[in-house]
Structures are given as C-alpha cells and as structure tokens.
Length: 277
Image (cartoon, rainbow, N blue to C red; front, side, top):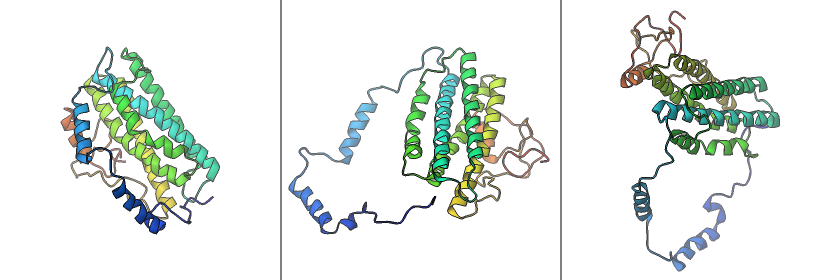
C-alpha cells in the first residue's frame, strides 16, 4: 500500500469555506464572550495554580532520585514496547516499502524493549523499590509521551507516518538512558551502570535504523552515510570510556557536569565506535 499522503480535497483550511468563513468571523462580533478576559489572564490562572504547591505525586520511601529515574525509564520503556507492538500491526496492514523495516526488524527492536523493561524492574526491586509505583518522573514521562500511542494506533496513519512518531521516542530514549547511566554510576551501582550502557547501545542502534527507514520512505539519503548521527562531534584527542568507545564532546560535557570522568585514550571517528574499530 502507498505510504505517502493521499491527494484529495482537504477542507481543514479556512479558505476552502469561502463566504462561510467571513460569516463565521462576523458572528464573533455579534456574540462576544460572556465575561472579560484574555490569553494573559489565562496565564495568571496557571501561575496561581502552580503556586499552590501541588505536584504529580510524591515518591514513597525509599525516595531516592535514582529510584525516581528508574521508574521514569520503566514507564517510557513500557510505552516504547507498546509503540513497536502497534508498529508491527501497521507493517501487517500496509506492508513494507523499499528501504523500510521488515517485520523481523520491528520484532527485534520490540524484544529489546521488553528486555530493557525487565532489567529496570529487577533493578528497582534490588534497590528496595516497587516497579508498579508511579514515581513523579514516571508520571511526567507518561504525560510527555501521551500523544505517541495515539498516532501509532490511529487507523488513518500508515507505516511511514508511524515511524516519524517513533523517532520522537527514540530521541528521548537516547538522551534519558545516558542520564540514567550517570545516576547509577554516581550511586555506585556498577551492575546497573553496565545494564544501562548495554541499553544505550541498543537505543543508538534503534535510532540509526529508524532514521534510515524514514529517509528511505521519503526517498532521500540519511545524513551521516550509514545512519551515524552527525550532531555528535569528536576531536583528535577525544577520550574513550572504559569500554573502549570514543566519547563525543557533548557527552564529555555531560559527564563533567555530572561529576564523572572518562579515561583518555586513542581517538576514533563515529559515535559508539570502539578504539581502533
């Protein structure tokens, strides 16, 4: 089936309504609002509500930042799994397109999302937490990502459009897993840190693949050749982490801000590239 937007009579614009649009505007002058107000007044109401001091919820003991962020990632990974489950349905409905994902490609990523969620559940339990608890950050993440499942489950969206929604989740995953790994390292949780680093490798691969699939659907070439992201910069003396991967200038700055460090070593080109690779 065609993955491109279909041509037809789009009547969502006001110019398509002709004289009816002018009549609608004129009616607003005949029937003004029942009370005075403006967009700025709405802002005042929001400010007053924010100052009441309420929040999404409070984390019960142990209320550690690490547990809060673990809950956030678990909520997001569960959402990610649902997204790829829905994407698999889109693939079955619309079929593949040239350069796009196969059903096996989607299943592979889906299984890795399941693995990430399982790892996070174990980590939360090991720290004495409850993986069913909605932490403040988890609540926030659920609200941030609320629109993505709507796109993937809408019967009107095709496979390519669904991939364009999924890349939003993949970008967030790549950012937030890096932060979680730093939290885990600061807390002295070496096993959790290693699990996060493995998940980061998976998520970078997911992002690379989704970028390539979207580019193929658009009929263009993805930046960075084989999908390697160009937004991460490297210098000749870029350090490597203890796993032998070159650290970008952006990640190096994040590590300094978090109080961590990297081991200097031989540089390389390309994000996640092993020294000498």
